[in-house]
Amino acid sequence: EVQLVESGGGLVKPGGSLRLSCAASGFTFSTYNMNWVRQAPGKGLEWVSSISSSSNYIYYADSLKGRFTISRDNAKNSLYLEMNSLRAEDTAVYYCARVSAVAGNHFDYWGQGTLVTVSS
Amino acid sequence: EIVMTQSPATLSVSPGERATLSCRASQSVSGNLAWYQQKPGQAPRLLIYGASTRATGIPARFSGSGSGTEFTLTISSLQSEDFAVYYCQQYNNWPRTFGQGTKVEI
Image (cartoon, rainbow over all chains, first blue to last red; front, top):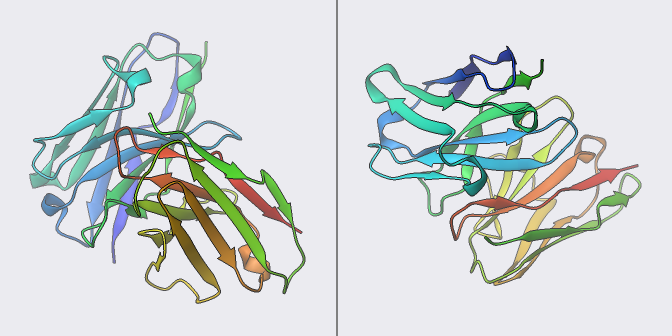
C-alpha cells in the first residue's frame, strides 16, 4: 500500500525556518517524481515545488523562489522541504504528492499533510 | 502561468441529480488535466487524469471530458459521499496550477 506521511510542521515565528519531511513507503520511491502542495486555511490548493526521481530537475512556484528548497534522499525514502524566511502567508497544510508513473504527470497519491503556522 | 478558472464556485444539488462542473484554462493544456476531490479534513484524492481517464477505484458515475482549454467533470447521479470540493489541475506547463475549486453541496 502506498503511504506518504508528512511531519515537521508546527508553530514558527515570522522570519523563522522549518524543515518538512515526507516518509514514503509501499512503492519504489527512487523511481518517482515528487511534489509539495500547500493549502492555506479555508483556501484552495497551491503547487509549491517538484523534484524529479534523481533530483536532476527541480521546479518552484515563482512566489517561493529563494526561500524554499526541495530535496530528497532516495536511500531513506524521504522527501524534504526546507522553508526559510517564513511569512504569515506561508501558513498552510503542506502535502507531499507523488507523480504518477502512468501516462501523464498528475498526482496519484497524497499524504495527509502537516500544518505549518507562522505567527508571532 | 496558466490560470485555471472553475465554475460555478458552489453547486447546490440533491442526491440522485446530475452535477456538471467546468474548468477553463487561460491557454491550451492539451489533455493534461486532472480532477481531484477533497472532503473536509482530508487530503485531495485523484479522480480523473488525462482529462477523461478515471483513476483506479473511482466509480463510473464520475466522468471527465474536454481538451485544450475547456473541461468538464460530470457526476451522473450524486451520492451522499460525493458532496465535497472538486479541483482541476493542469500539468502541461510549469508552474503546475490548480483551479480555485467548486464546492458541491446539498
